[in-house]
Length: 231
Image 1 (cartoon, one colour):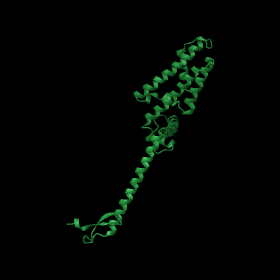
Image 2 (cartoon, helix red, strand yellow):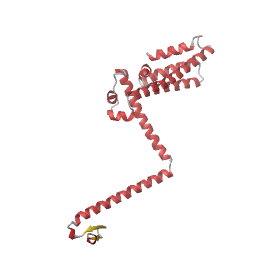
Image 3 (cartoon, rainbow, N blue to C red):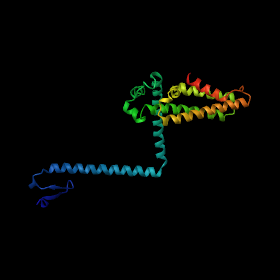
Image 4 (cartoon, rainbow, N blue to C red):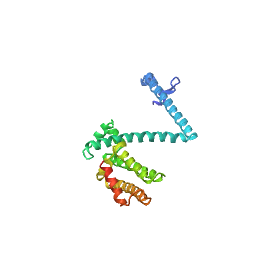
């Protein structure tokens, strides 16, 4: 049998087939060398993994730092894409804009664009959502300030003009809400209503303090909303 035809080759540390089977030792040597190299690579990978695990265990904060850095980088890229999408929406209209148009505006391939956003609806939603969030933040900051109510309202109007016309060129964020799916549209409408209530509250406070003439606060707040959307 072939069992007795195997003998030990000490120079390559493997079993080689004896000459009577006519298999050249050079082939066996080459295979043995590759096996040895693979084992060395695996040991190196295992060692690096163990070292990295030890470092992470000793310094758990490093994981958070790396994760936060990656999150900020991704968020910055998404914001660049949102700005590009807002420009395309305003230039071509939401209905006519395509993902390829947005990818070209953002200097991305269509495949890379889909890595960040699943489709045009999601892009439009984030344009709207981010704009309304910034306006809500501005309204809250104005409400918390100690300046006269008239100055608070001016700050709110100045902020929402900036966020809708400059930062994301986002008038589209308020004119195209009906194009969103119901689930997404509902969230935007809730935030817009909250923003309108904040503006209305400022107007009511200004009337009570005698800074504004008596008026229908709801009607004035709605007029500010409509006027902003058509600037």
